[in-house]
Length: 296
Image (cartoon, rainbow, N blue to C red; front, side):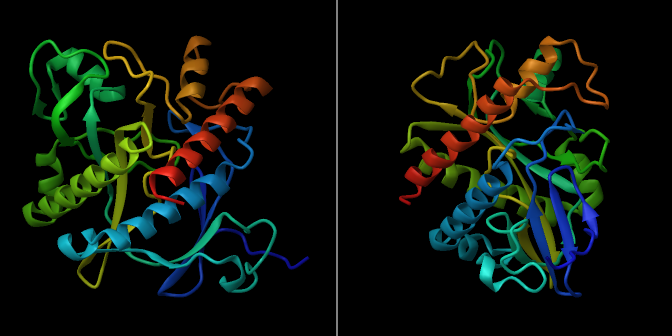
């Protein structure tokens, strides 16, 4: 077996290998991260599912015309296992979970779009009646549909730290008005496109986060796109405002470890096998539903 290099960067889920100044290889592991802590136990097949789902959405976005309309690109160069550079080409540790991408200057914000009131947005609303500076109508319930999707950026935290919701004004102070406006427009446009496609499969896209880079002064969609790790999906048939709808993601794990009274700091608690298998099944189910929505 060929000896593989160590990753140049190891994230919570993805490993990055710098090929040259222009390209890098991204490998999605089966590692599970919740509350910004990496668990010791993997979710089998998770990395393969994340990679396939991302690739499907990147392809759908290319065909949609949004990239031309809103003047952005994506980072994908190659997705075929047998066309990856050596020593990664067809290597069993990389098959089905790796892509070759363009290197960019990363924008150090997560571009979050929310269509429903959930998660940290719901907690913010309960405290202040607003979410990241967006004032919302009184009397909204958990999981209510928002009057329109809102853009709520977050800082991009280092490994082990917590991402922090910030106002758009804070983002403007760091990036400038024009770039912030462009990232908001692109993010909301992708969210609306994905929401419409998923509704055809009986799925509600509650919220999602995007990451972007800059290359030759153009905005590039990077990292992952609309995966169950970066998005909250709900089954429309069981959706009920005023509750916390079950999702197709690691929310099942979050709920389990919160019930344990875990302080959300390393080390993460051990997960029983039934929680691991249930989580794997949720990832597999949303993969199937996304394939249906995209006509695969």
